[in-house]
Image (cartoon, rainbow, N blue to C red; front, side, top):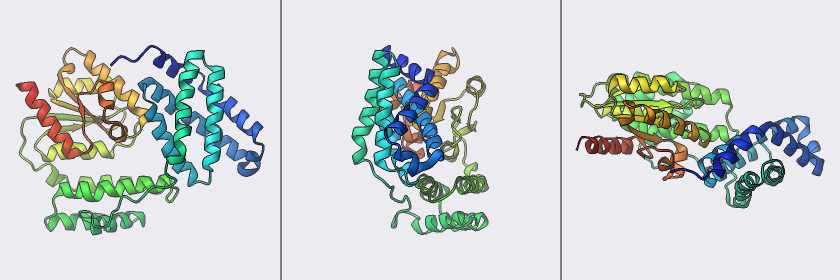
Length: 358
């Protein structure tokens, strides 16, 4: 789908003046409400400037995708994150109102109106946005006791205990897929929730994620034991997206279903992805984006693959949080499909391969 010419120009205009717009925004909000300096101090002003830069980056992505909901969803995330760090929702709303004014004043008329409209939509939606997030570790869910024990072991920094819990469960007959879906996945979501709500530090989040990746590798004798079916899948994250554990889980699921998988990790250059598709005669390319800011980079990779006369035959699956929030987003960026989880991704990939051979 080709976006109207005004959308890319609005996105480019925002990015081109991001620094100047952020500075004008912060000057305006602190001039109009001097008590903000008393409430948050000079450090608060610096953080407000930093936040403005983030808001503008996400706004530019939403404009490039012509998708207002992408920016609204980001502000919902920011409201929780900032609120749990003692930033009032009313201050965030005022910050965004000032941003809309500055966008109208500093950008070309059509671009400014378009960009400000996205921001205003987010402000209107703010009252209905949650101030906190519920836990992802639900009582009564499959393997719930193990998931709780695993998560608490990681949170205490006891990765050896976390590993033992998982290995003992697998040895007792729990399928590895069930461990991925009902232990690793909710635990990682919960870790992300606790960071967003200021209940754990970045260091703790990194530790827990690294520990889970290590424990996943300890299960590889079972993951790679499946008889192969002759199909090949390549999995990657786009440049700048360092949250690679989700797409790694997807690759492992394909491996357990008999696919040959090549997990390329994060920030692999487009040329290397294309070369691997050709070298391995890949049937499917799976691309992950964990936040909306990276969706445009996913589209860029898809365009590069489609432009190659050999690699363009590969079927492209996309997944991650932005695509779960907007089920039609995959069409807008040129993918062949999207799935909300690893098991459904396999079902969709199998159908794609069957259609290609029909």
